[in-house]
Length: 102
Image (tube, rainbow, N blue to C red; front, side):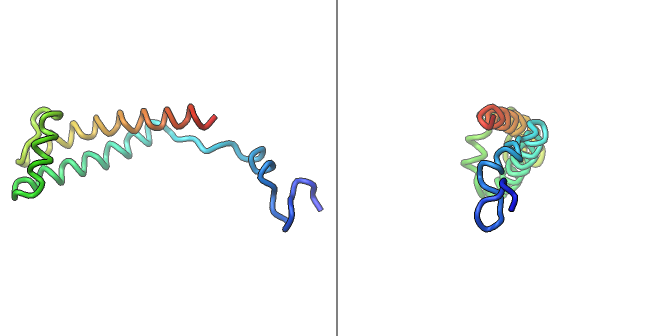
């Protein structure tokens, strides 16, 4: 029996840690993913606020995102700001994770 394997024929935990390094995030890819998700959410909230749903949230976010409001043009402006905001947040989260996962 191979000495790298524990009971039951599966590799031991120590062997697995030697064989596979910790998974790491690709910061730019994670930033784009979070940016797209946040932009879609902000766009959706802006469009629904036209009909009166979630207008308090849109009003609160409009204090952060210039041009954001309950209109199609305002929702697109908010989505652009939301993408930038989400991208930066995803980039920072991935960078911190990669630093801690060493």
